[in-house]
Image (cartoon, rainbow, N blue to C red):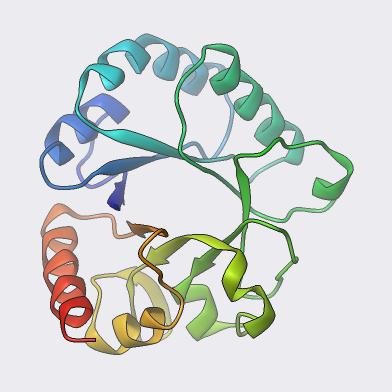
Length: 197
């Protein structure tokens, strides 16, 4: 399954999901903080999101481990079907029970081992290298290009080739680029590299 972030055009989660419908299989709902406005917006749009022929992952808040847990509890509480929750390994995360659908992302300068991992190719290229012994734990891959020390740009063949070693058929492939044209270009690059592996 391939997916995209919920931000490729200015707008709400639903605006982006409607646009992405028919392009990707799933949308990663970017929930970088858990403010009242974000909570209300997701609650308001949740039924309409589920009417679309899309699956969803959730990138949990990165500002606070407690906000991340509150967001997780909210989605679970409204029975919103989530394929995977992505969590940054913030200080204190191991002291909280996260359930069976949370995975830990490799960051540029921190990689915490867990039984469910997210491999971010940009973080891998620009920072610490993903440990070989954790490759089998990967459930989701974040794809993007890296140019001049900056990630989250359109995918290029170099980054796609690096990511190829971390992708299996059962792994979610999520394009973390924040522009529709860059997303469409990135999907083409990935499909070309994937089919010629």
